[in-house]
Length: 85
Length: 441
Image (cartoon, rainbow over all chains, first blue to last red; front, top):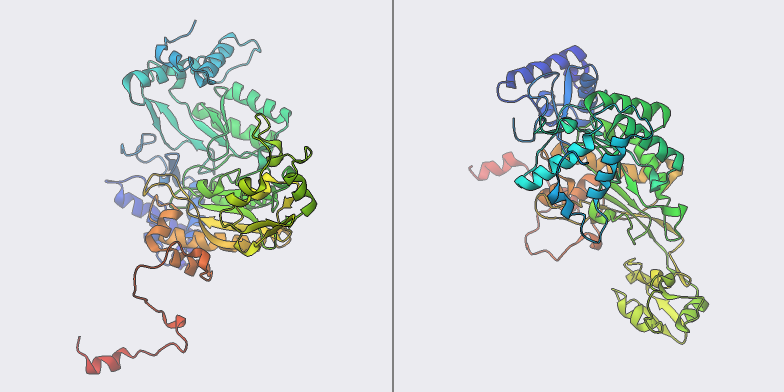
């Protein structure tokens, strides 16, 4: 696990900052987008940390039924058809 | 008196087949009468409105549902699919009408007490409308509001020992056949394996991190009652390594048309098909023509048997699957969203199904595949599409499985071979600096 991912506060800040930076154009992100924030970590390790952030209500899931995206808690459209954002 | 006129839906009841419209009308009436005095937690007339919105969709030729959203239960990234009606003023009963997926038990065995408890809960906190079962295999509970989700989840997990199923970019609820609980053909205990993997991969089921959906399905034998070969990203099909067991006396009873030995276990008794003809009904239909019957003796060239199961199905009292059993693993099946539908491709011809070592031979393949797909798969790309894009050879490389003739779909058309160093005896040394001394860039 990289130092960044291992440090809970720094990892959370990196995710929140990255999402805020993108928030003008996008509020929901694929899981793969987190790979860019933690390029040195394996997906299954990133997953454990990101899902902790959901449990701590920093992030939330958005699901179309077939695909799941992640967003900042309360950010963007809360429910809608796919492709309507 | 129905709340909404539904002339278009009424036509769907006119055919000879059972109609979901009749079922919904019946449920709307049950809720309207409420003879059991249920304290409905969502609008009593939600099923009337469900019929109404469907009628409107038929009239307009387009849907009035929106799907997707943040709804779910705490800590879970699947199991609930948000549904909203885009005509809430006309149909307030279905303004929020979420779907819940409930993990079905292995082999879909229920007690009547369980089913009564579940339907009672759903009458109380939902629409009472269910789909037993959805395409993935789950129990589908159709229609409830957001505040009811946690309540339903609490009752299911605390009082019924019941979990939600998978949805979204998760491992979907694994599904299996009845297996050894009822079927003599089953080559491994499908229910034990499905139960183990469901527990082992709880995180993958509930906390989404895959590029898209991922499905496991388990067939106890190549008859494939679950059709795992067509319906799952990873399909586990029972098979055997040794020979088909032959009872020659029983074969001759079939040949003699002994009444105690009906062909196909008597499955087609409803009509007189004439006397059983071994040559026509078994030997000639063998896909690899690996059987012969001479001097009252049936012989099978087992090395050429493709496990089609036809002979065993026709003469179950005479032929049985081998004793050295396990399963084959096939990968990459999917429905036709991109590139058309695909059947699974054989990856592992035979693997032991061993509960004593926690099925380690199977979990190793699964986890290697997941690591590759999570790393390389594009967003919303199924495993089958990744295999198409990067090649089956790449799949063999990441799983550490050696290529065998059964992996080859057709002879190569590309005459060039790109060897890797470790594939060539002795390897080679390549000094780029030395090369550049003599060859400029």
